[in-house]
Image (tube, rainbow over all chains, first blue to last red; front, top):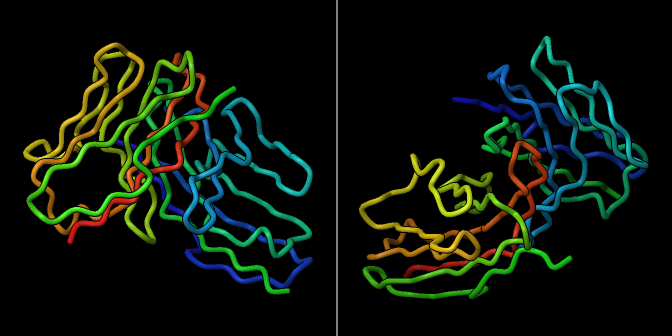
Length: 111
Length: 114
């Protein structure tokens, strides 16, 4: 089955700096890669996603890149703000709609 | 568009008792998931339904957990009997299916087993 690894497990940045979270996957059949943000006590919220036929996608301050050859994808947050502090999860999914999650990255943005 | 609904939001039970959770997915979503999320960890899939059929229940502890989605819409997850290690948040999610991705989560049920 699919195996998704996520790094780092914790990340602290100064407000205004950039944050990068990286994930790798093992199954070449995975074709959809969402990122979720989970604030304490709340549900995971889909913040951005990318499909296997695209190399990069951007939405305001967040972007995701995908390297299918190397089987890794990354989340980039620019101009970080305190409200970006949360746990971020990556996931990989296939045509069977099965989702495999990373172990999460706890991001802290220091004002 | 209404989101994924779950109830109850919180539940406290003693070990060896039974508990049931309910989920109503986004209208028209064919795929429904139940996840267990232990504090500090990522969601762990318990069971995945496609309409009213089971796609994946390989990680469901079948000796104590059961789930059904009889009419292909809402779903219930039951634990009988509960153990201390079942304390977690149980998340329901739904997806349009047909390989379209875009999974959306409900608010979750926080279960505490004492």
